[in-house]
Image 1: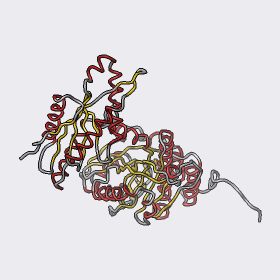
Image 2: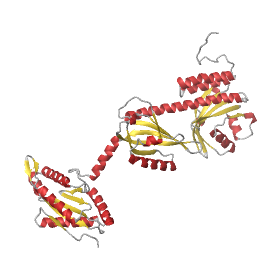
Image 3: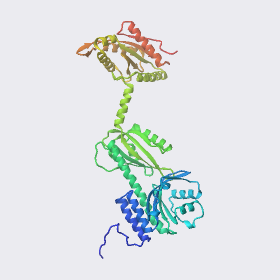
Image 4: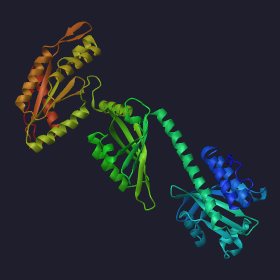
Length: 495
C-alpha cells in the first residue's frame, strides 16, 4: 500500500454536508489555522464560516460576555457568519454592546446555565409561549444551539447556531463535536491574551529591567524568569524553586514583612494589586532592590490558586528616594543634619533619658564675629568656614552623637547618654580644635573661634523646647563673658 499525504485545508471536502465527518474535518482544518496560521481574530471568522457551511445553518455567531451582575448582563456581538445577506445581524445597533435586564425567570435560568458552562438547544415551535419564544420568532429563528465558551473556568462568551429555515434537533454527537469548536475558540482567546502579555512584557523590559513570576498554592512552587536573578545577562531557562528556597533569595530583613503583607492581602480585597518593595539576592550574591507586583487567581470555590505578576528593578527609584530622604534631613551646605532631624532626635533622646533615668546633654554653638568674616571676605569665605567647622566637629563625634546646623552659623550637638561633666569636656576639646585649626580660602588662612552653651537633662521630665532654651541662654552667657568659651546653665527641668 502506498503512502498518501495531504494537508488539512483539503481534508474532508468530499464529505456530505451536515455529516458528522464533515463537521469534524472542518474543525480539524480550523484548528490548524487557529494554532499555527491566522490565529485571532481572523482564524475565528474562518472557523465560523466552515462550521456554517458544513452544518447548513443560517447563521453562526459569537456573543462576547462583557459583564454579568445580579440584575443585568452586558454583551457584544463580535463575530458572525451568515449564509445569506438576509440572515446577517452583525452591525445592528440592538446587538452592539447591549445590556439586558435579568428580570425574567426563563432568561435568568438561561444566563445561570451558561455561567455553569452548559449548552442549550431549542426548537422554537416547541417552546412554551412567553418572552423567549417571542424574541426568537421576531428574529425569524426556528431552531438554535448555543455553546458557552469558557476561558479559565469563566464564561467568556457564547458560540451560537441559528437556523431560520429548519426545525432542527441537534444530536448529542453533533453537540459534542461543536463543543470542540468552543474549545478551539477558548484556546485562541488564551493564545491572544498570552501574545498580548508577551508584547506588554517586551515593552516593559525595554523601559526597565523586569522578570515575571508565579506562585502555585497547590504545589508550593515558585516560577520566575531569570532576568533579575542574574548579575550578568545570560540566556537561560526559566527557574523553579520551592517556596523555602525562593524566600532565601530575599534579604532576611524583608522576608517576614513580605509574608505578613501577603497574608494581609489574601485576607483583604483580592481585586487590588499586591505590591511590595524588597531586596533580592542575585546569583553572584549582590543585592538588588525590586518591586514585587501581582494579583490573585482564585478557583471556583473562591480559594486562591495562583499569585502571579512581575518583578521590576527599582534601584534607580530607591536611590532617588534615598536622595530625597537625605535632602529632607540634611543641611545642603555642610552635609550635617538639619534642624528638622535634630528636633526629632532630641525628642527621642529625652524620652529615652526619662524612661531610663540617665542624663543627656546638648551643646549650642556659633562662630564668633561671623558677620565680620562675611563682610570682609564675602559669603563664600563664610560658607567655607562653616564647612570647615562642621568637619572639625564630625572628627570629634562619637557614633551616637548628632551634629546639626540650625541656620546661619548656629550649630547644635546632641550628646545622648552623656552627663554634664563629660559634655563639658567634649565642648572644651571642640573649642581648642577650632581655635587651633585655621581654614584656607582664596590662598589665605583664616582663624576662627566659637562660643558654646551647654544644657543637660538629668533624666527627669523635660521638653525639647525647654532644653533648647537653656542651651541657647548658656550660649548667650558665653558671648557676654568674652566669647571662645563654654558656659553651662542649670535649671532646665520641668519640676
